View 1 (cartoon, rainbow, N blue to C red):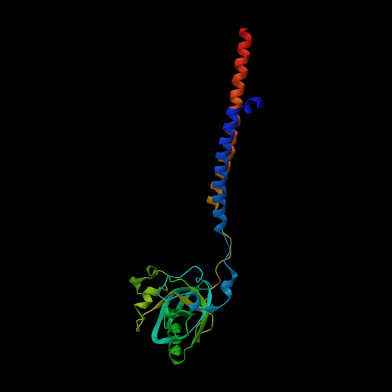
View 2: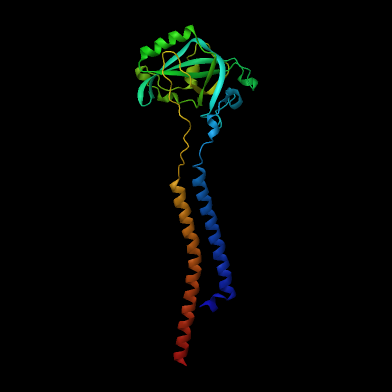
Length: 257
């Protein structure tokens, strides 16, 4: 059979099948790389605080680099521009967030962010009364330096408007509620990492570093590997069939003679 396989016709067929198999293998490798890329852990530099103005620009979309980072910012809370959000979990316990309107006063790295507004989640309270009481204390003495985790704005569709409840921290919604309408606004919001009088710290863990595997892409990669193997097997099957036909024809010729 191998003498038949060394004929030019079957050598050319082998080259063609190997080329097809190589293409299938390359597609399998591509699918496998996609499943691995989806599980790259988040860079640990997210836990190194940096000035917010170095990562984000007001009136610009929040970037993947800035999302989840620990940042610092200097500014003042606008009196009266406080919002209480209901239905907020803290260590799996439902309660309320107190959110303030901060206006940056630091020397921003980029001029577009100088004096920009930022929504700041100041703390969590178990009851609405506790949240309201904490707001009264903030009117008397508000911090000017803030640090915490910078997170993407939430969707306002999560609010229960029918029952008069506001659950989501949506920057777009808050802008329309603040008494002093801002000219420039950061796309995300800050969860402070310092205790606010009368409030508990909000649990804001670092971005997940768990590696997720895309099993669908792995399944496709295995499929391409099977196709590549089948291409080579097909060539072997065709050569064997041709050899068996020649053997049968030779046997028939021998019997005739």
